[in-house]
Length: 227
Image (tube, rainbow, N blue to C red; front, side, top):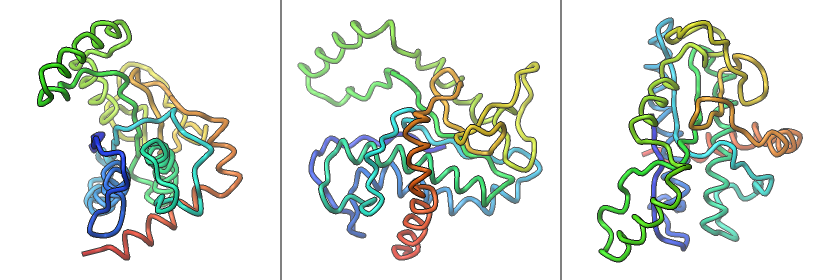
């Protein structure tokens, strides 16, 4: 399970490989991590074999720049967030097609008070507490969020493309995948475990060949930066 990275810098700050740190934290490093573990995940089949990445399905953007996926031109923090989210969707779709005994789940946790302001100054902490009080009706309790993500990581309603897998809970049906197909192996879900995706945007991007473009870009980039 990979979790959402946080970086307060607004500028394009490069890693030693020449990639933006935020985009690397939220996308490239996660895919590298997944690729490294896929042989072990596939070896676990027919037992549960699953990847869960916590980021932001439903926030996809048709402004995804297919000729500038690494955002070395025209960078902004907002673009980096949208690129990471949308590229994760398509990377998981493509991975599910190629690694058919492993399922891939991209989740949005919703608003969760994780204590990320604990190292902030006194005034920032005070402002944060006031903000949390105002938006508390829309927040997800941290314990509930943990339970729901454990469900996402283990439930049989998110199976791999070519096999069943996970714990069966009652008679709940298998979920539709990111491409709309039931049991496709790649899933986009919100804080309640239900499908969360901007289908209009995703359909438009599929017509432009986004899945294959994102997969090829990511694979080539990771191969070129392999240490």
